[in-house]
Image 1 (cartoon, one colour):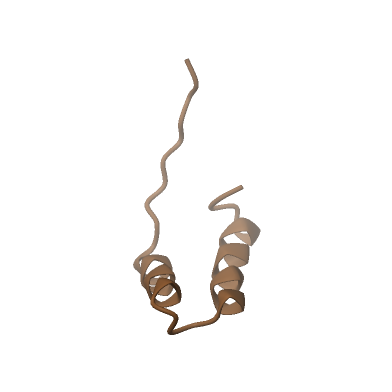
Image 2: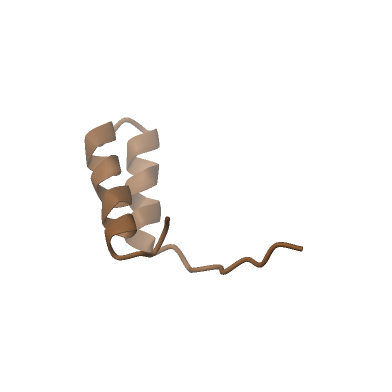
Length: 44
């Protein structure tokens, strides 16, 4: 059975994803947020 390590997604990331899905920010801006999470090792 796989082991999962769950982390709470910060509100600003959820807000950024919502803005991107509505077309209010660019894909590049959203990608920058995801890259930041990878950089701080919040996601892989």
